[in-house]
Image 1: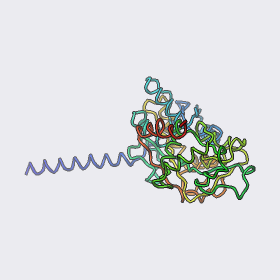
Image 2: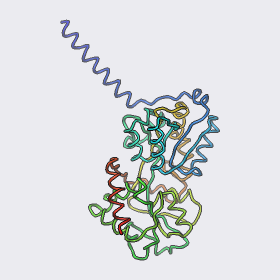
Image 3: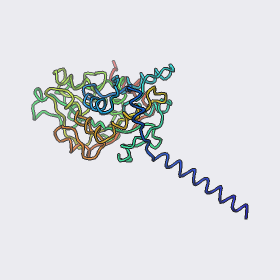
Length: 340
C-alpha cells in the first residue's frame, strides 16, 4: 500500500510540475509601474524611424513620466550593435525591437530575458514564441512603391514580374541583399510567389541594374526624389514619408512580424517591461498605427488607403538560420548582384 501511495505521489508531483511549466509558458507577467517610474528612463534600440515613433513615445512619456532614449538603425544594424555590446560585456539596451530573423539570432545568443506582457495575450497565437523571450507587436507587409508624379497610371507595375520590363532598367531601387538581412530574407521567400523559379527571378531582377541602398527605409526617399521610379519596400512608408508615393495592391504581400525583447541584463528592467506592455496595449497599438504601422490589435489599421485590404493577403516569411543568412548574403546574392 505504501508503495502505491508513493507512486501516486510521484505521479501527482510530475503532473504538478508539468502544469506549472505549461502555465509558465502561457501566463503574462504584471508590470511594477511604480518601480518603472523610479528607474526614470528606458533605452531602446529599434528599427522604426524616429519620426514614426514620435507619437508613440510622446504618449508613453506623458503617461508615465519615463524618458525614452531611442537609437534607430535597420534590423541588421540593431542586431550588430546589441550583439557587439553583449559580447563586450557592456549591454546598454533595455529593449531591442527588430524583425524576427535577427531577433531569433540574438535570442539564441542569450541577449534576452523572459517577459510576457499582459496586453499581448490576445494576439494571434501564430505570432507568439512559446518561451516568451520575444514579443510580437507589429507586422511589415512589403509591396512595390512608385512615384505617383513620374509613373503614369497605365504604367504602374501590378506584380513583381512587371518589374522585369526593360523600361524599368536602372529605375528600380531595392536594399542591398548582401548587407540587409530582411531583404535577403524577402528574396529567399519569393518561392511563396515564384515557386522553384524564385532564384531565376532574383537573377533577372539583378540584370535590371537596380539602385542598391542600405536598407528598406531609404527606398522611399529615393522614389520621392526621382532617383528611382519604383522600388520594393514596406507599405508603411507611404505614410511615414511625405511626397508623391503610393503602393501597389497585390494578391500576396510577403510580411515580416517584428518583435520587442527585454534585455537579459537591462539596467532599467521595469521600465523596459512597461515599454513593451504599452507597445502591445490598445492605446499603444493605436498610437503606432497612426504613424503608418500595421499592428496586431484587431480592427486597427494605419491611415493608408485600402489598408484594411492588406492583412488578408499577407504571407508570413520563413526565417533562414544564421548559417543560411550568411550563405545567402556573402555568396548567393553577392555573386548575383556583384558579378563582373
